[in-house]
Structure formats: structure tokens, C-alpha cells
Length: 338
Image (cartoon, rainbow, N blue to C red):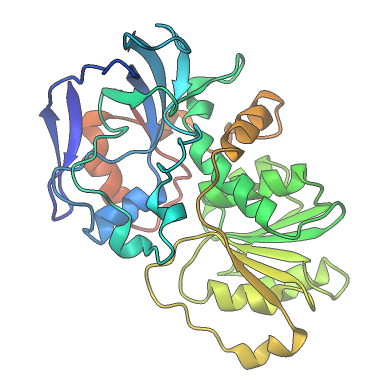
């Protein structure tokens, strides 16, 4: 099978690897699509993925072979690669390790994931794709579950106003989930034209360009001089976390969803007297993947503004795609089509 193997030094190679054979308790999945996640781009940019790793964890496909002990799945079932509840004692380190550090512990050596044509998975790992949810949407289940997790961890309530900093894939998904959770007003800060257009197309009440507008002033003005009830930092670049604290209302909440790899300076004296609360949101829980799929099936989560025809790249184009994504770009989401 073909796979994009990370070689280190910001280099992928397209190699022929042995197609895995499922063990008695496993299924073999033919990967159809794998979305490129920002954490994979970080692994490439900072050269932290171990050489020999096949990245990619936002994927969907079809079961082409089942192990001898499998009764839950059959050949032809459409699935996403993850979301199942792990058996007791098999929880991932991010949940089980009390001192988990994503920067140093987040990339297991030698793993083979969605930038490969085939993946063998234990019976419990995949989830079925509901009828009516196309492959390109199903491939976005993992980041959608991240958005569900972030909003669930937040204090967003019916009628609240929400600010979102950054209209990348996660920001656009958080905005939609917040709306579905009852937010009456959703505002986004985003400088790039393509992403601004995407934010408007999903129904945000306002999109502000931080290179041309004072985002704090604009969001405060749209909330009767108070500031949004909850602000999600989905950009995670220098200055955005401090900006979120300055924007949010008195006793409001800031939620960090982005994964910043650089220091995030804050000047707390400007906003700490307003007794702002802060929360970090990381990843998702298995129970939140079916929630995301159900929202897609009901039309509460749309991928139409995230995934355009130009979003797709072949496996052979993955090197150029990653090189493009580490630079400022108007691209919203890129998807590897296998």
C-alpha cells in the first residue's frame, strides 16, 4: 500500500508499505479521505514527529476485511477512524497520564495512521458513519468533536454572546457548535479573505479583520458595552490569548482551544480586576464523536464552507500541502484524497 511516511527534517516520502492483515479482533479499513490537522502541521513545522511515522488522524473509509472474531462490523461498512470507547486500562496517555505533556509525549514512534491507504484497527476503535453524512464531512468528525468538547467545557448558555478568535477549521466548527448550543450572537476575528468568507457563510453575526479593525472595541460594542460572555481562542498566536482576556465581559470566560507552540504573552493587570475565568480545552472524549456525527446528520454542522473543490490533494501532493500550510494562508481546510 502507499503511505506518506514522515522522514524527519520536514520531509515526507511516498513509500510502499506492507498492507496490514487484520488480527482476529480487528478490521481492515480502506482510507478514502484524511483531513490535514493543525497538530500534524505542528509536527511537521517543529520536526517533532518521529521518522517513520505515518501521520493523519482525521479520516474516513470503508471496511474491506474483518477478523475471524468480528461480529459488529461487515465488509462495506462506512466508518471513521476513531471515536470508539477504549476498554478499561487502554485509555490514551493524554487522559490517563497525570503529567501528560503533549509537546514531549504526543507523537508515538512508528505509528501508521490516515496518510496510508489501509489501516488495521481493533473492533472497538471505529465508528459507523450515519446515512446522509458524506465522506468529506465524516473525515472532519475528529475536529468537530474537538469543537463539541470545547463548547461543552465552556459556560456557553442559551442566549449568550460568543467571540471566536481565528476562523480556521476549529474556529469555524466552534462557532457552529456554540450556535447549536444556544448562543444568540457569534462573532469571529479573522484576517484572511477566504476564512472571513467562510465565517460569514456559516451565519456568524459579524466577522472582524484584526488588521483593519479594533476587534475588542467592535465585539464590546456589539454586546452593549459588556463584551461577549465567552471568548474562544482558536488561533493561538502571539497576542490572541491576551486579546481574548481583554475582550470578554466581567466574570466571563476565556477558553483556549488552539495549541500554541510559542510563548503567549499576557498583561494581566489590564483585565484581572474583572475576575475573568480561564479554561483550557484539549481534544475530545469518545462520547463526543457520535454527538458531532449526529450534528452533521441534522445539518447543525456544515463542512460546505470549510472544504471546497480546491481543498483536495492527492497523497503525492502532501509535501507541497504541508509546506503551504506552515505559511499564512487563506486556505480553510485541506484534505488528502486516497
